[in-house]
Length: 354
Image 1 (tube, helix red, strand yellow):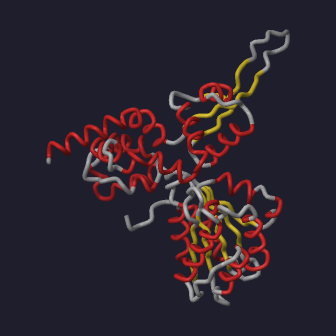
Image 2 (cartoon, one colour):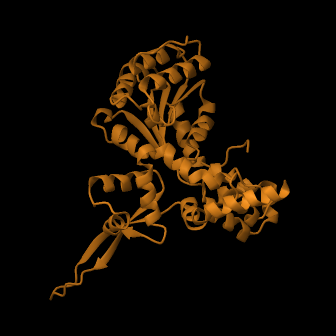
């Protein structure tokens, strides 16, 4: 779909940032496929110059040198900078700063920033130094740090004492509202019942990238069958893709956690027992990252104590985690248990056609 849908409040906030005469350091977080890069590109249409950089997706053996090589190539394509063999991120950011015009509004997007820093344990420090020494000193410069691994941004930027007082705004993109989702049906929307729309949204939620796959000429069942229950459908392989891209080597553990929550919300002890892992730092960190990435919701419930006293019964507060993502819930309940059958039936039908 060529037109940008929704995010009116966020776009208004970004316009206010662009109108500033000073520089701004901005973060943009949200679930994978939520449209973070697309949102920044849309907002950057109001700038004089827009430069976009993205790290390579995680894979075994990926090095800092390879990330720097890709950065140099991306910069060369968007500016007059030569393709240099960069030795460090300090050199990379200095080269980028040298290509900025002396006047005008500039937006620099560092997308999937946690990927960009693979192989460089001090990457956040290089970003801080580049901001302090280069980008913050240029008027009307907006640097956007963007990523699906929200916990990385929170740990290394938002909660890092080195960045205190430096970042200006934090965008956390949520799924689109129902009224915004309806726009993906276009003119055909008036002929499609609310029930049909809700059936499809029950699978996708308000995730823009998923809604782009919607064919308004088909019923909800036809769309779901095509996308979920066909080996070539986007939603058939999406689960493994997003978990590998975001969590890399941790993906198997995180997969176990979300699978443990398919049949309902659970406390940390219940999750620990279900997946056979001790309650502790690693499990707590995994839950934090799944919440930050938009897949789980953390709820605080109150329950009455069973201890009987003369005073009023005290209430204890218990943390419970639940799947908050429509796609994950649908996939784990209705697609994954039948993957082999789906693949076999497809191959059988294909052989019959042949």
